[in-house]
Amino acid sequence: MSVILILILASLAVAVAFLAGFIWAVKSGQFEDTCTPAMRILGEDEAATQLSSEARDTNSPKRRPEVMAYPGRNVEGSDR
Image (cartoon, rainbow, N blue to C red; front, side, top):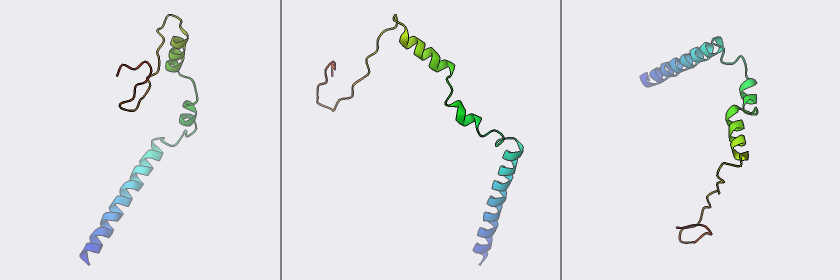
């Protein structure tokens, strides 16, 4: 019987801790702007612009994508 009492008290303590954490998050402004983080991924950033300009540069070396092969099979251009 005492085990049930301990488990109930422990579950209440965990519930109060989660409630306190949620209240702290709301008061600190975690849920004020929910739209901007989702839209940020759709915008173009500086790193993507720089990579695309390097890809268009004629002086940059052309990279050939690596071809994955099954072990033991020779793939054109593969020295393995």
